Length: 333
Image (cartoon, rainbow, N blue to C red; front, side, top):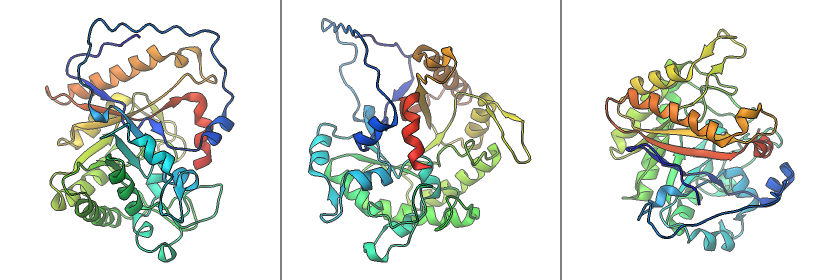
């Protein structure tokens, strides 16, 4: 088995890289071409690492897919097969409510009796609906499998009719502070990871750097006042983004400048996330290669380290898949 040596001081976690979703959805999204031959050599003569942290493994718990495919509504519990399978990953991290869907997720409408929960519009392909696998159910699930919760905060807004409606910063800050109260009361001494939004610098959001930093700082301050032990994770990227539409149309947000602005704007944060999509048959040849992608990651990590004055940043891979699997992700649009 081949191993890629990491520079000393870098801990790259594979947390949250496995999606808990219906295999039928994934298999229907892209054809699988089987390799003609595979050769793996395992050398057990030497121990490269005698201990692996429990956070090496993680699961991206996209609430919509989980609710549709893995949730027993009558029992208000995950399917027995899932609970059994997850016992093999004690201490693993579970990322909820997902990626981009987190940017439009109204957590207050996911707690309490199900009939009293409000409707939410979270996917283009369907009408607004009630969330059955809400925050309380998620926390119960994580406890039942001995995992650690990772919550992706909503810094943007929500709506019952449209996919996205931005709300004032103060509204989102107050909402996240209330969520922190619930999380702290429910989890006790279990670590509480809060990811500061998801990809708000790109996609349909394209926030300027300072807007992301300001909203993140406001929410962090409110949560820390309630839960001083909360752990925050900011997202970075390893590529340049060209703005499409709006006042910044055509201008480019360089990855190095984005990293610099986020790290300087959030000096207390030392946990950062990156997304690893690779091997897309529709991309130019070099983009298909894992070594090229790893080099992209390394340059982003190097850029982050330069702005931490000797501190070693913790880098989390919070989304991970072959590029061909992106077709499945379009179900969530």
